[in-house]
Image (cartoon, rainbow, N blue to C red):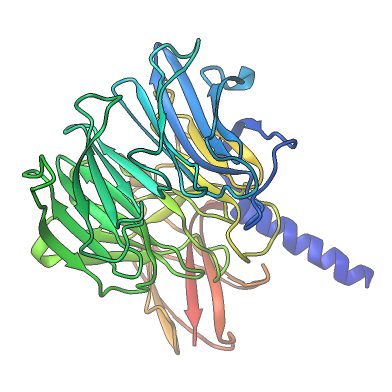
Amino acid sequence: MKKVSILFLIILFFRIDLYGQQNTNLLFHWQDTTLVGSGAYNNTYNEIWGLNINGSEIAIIGSTSGTHFFDVTNPQNSSEIAFVAGAYTGPGVIHRDYHDHNGYLYIVCDEGSVSTLQIVDVSNLPNSVNTVYDSNNLLNKVHNIFIDTATSKLYACATGEAMEVFDLSNPDNPILINTYNDVGHVHDAYVKNDTAFLNCGNDGLRIMDYSMVNSTSDSPIELASFTSYPDAGYNHSGWLSDDGNIYAMQDENHGYDVKILDVSDFSNISVLATFSSGVDPNSMAHNGIIKDNLLYIAYYHDGLRVFDISNPSNPIQVNSYDTYLPNNHISYRGAWGVYPYLYSGNILVSDMQSGLYVFELSASTSISEQNLKVRTYPNPINSSFTISNINATKVEIIDFFGRKIRTERLNQNINIFEKQDISNGFYFFNFYKKNKLIASEKIIFN
C-alpha cells in the first residue's frame, strides 16, 4: 500500500508540474471564507472584469453577495476598495455579469425575482463608486451582457427573451430598441461595430447586422448561421480577433474542444483548428478572450490556459495556472472568467470556489517568437503517426495517469513512428526543446 501511495504522489506531482503551472506567476489572491457558496455548484464567485481608470488598475469580481472592487495597481498590496450589494443575494446566486462603458459599470444577475440591472458610476475610482440605477423595470434576470462601445448599444442575453438590445446614448437611462427571438436562446454575444456574434446554445452561432437597428420597429439582418462543426454542442461563448478574421468559440460540454473559426468571409465560415487544455478528456472550456495573438481561457477545473494563436491553424498552449486543486472534472467548478486588458499586462482570473487571482505571464513564452510549428497527424491514430516540427527536439507520450509511455527524438523535418504496443485511449504528446516543455497535444489512439 505504501508503494502505491508513493507512486500516486509522484504521478500527482508530475501532473501538477506539467499542467498546473506554466510560465505564470501568482501576484495576488483573495478569498472571503465568510461568503456563502451557491446551492447548485458551491460557487461563491462568478464573473471577473477589469478597469484602467485614473492611473489605477481595478479588478471587479462577482460573488453571491454582490460586486467587489479591488485596487490591483500594485498587486502585492492589493485591497478591496468598494462593494455594491446585489439586489438578490445568497445561495440562490450562480451568475453575475459585467461590462463597462463611458465611466459606468453595468451589472446583471441571472437568478432571483428581485434581481435588477445595476448601473454604477466608477469614474471616481479608486476612491469611490456610486450606484446611479438599480431597478428591474427594464431587466430582471439576465445571463450575460455585452456592450458595443463603438455604437453605445448593450446586448442583454437570455432575459426571458432570447436577447434584448438597448441604446446607451444616455448611459444611466438605457432605452430598449430591439427584441431578438429568432432562436430559442442566446447565451452570450460578442459585438463590434454593430456586427453581433451570437452564441445560441444548442442553435449554434448566428452573426447579425445591427447597423440599421435604432428603434423597436427596426430588425437586424442575419449575415450567417453556423450550426454544423466538429464537437458541436452547447454553443456557450466566443471572442473575435482584433482584425475581425478569427473567432474563438467554446461549447460548454465536458470533453469538447475549443474551436478556432475563420470568419473573414461570412458566406464561407470554416474551422481552422480544434484543441483542448490537454489535461483531462473531460475538461471543459468556459469563457475566452483574444488579445493580440493570445487566446486566454478560463478553463473551469483546469484554471487559466493561454494559447498562442499567431498560427490559428495550430494553437499552442504557452501559459497555465490551475486555480482548482481537486483532480476531478465533475459538475461546473473552477475558473469562471479571465480579463487580460490591464495596462500592466497582468491577468485577472475568477475561480468559482477560491476567488480572485492576479497573474503575471512570462514575457518570453510567445511561441510565435520561437517560430515553433508542431503538428501530429492523424488524430485519432490507428497504426502509425507523423510529427512535423521545426523547434522541438523530443516528444514524450504520457498516458491519462501521468505515466511516461514512450520517448522519441525528433529532427526538424518529418518524423514517422509506428503505434507499436500503445494501448487505445487518451494520451498527451509533450514536446520539448533542450528539456523545456514548449507544447502539448491531446492525442487519441484507437
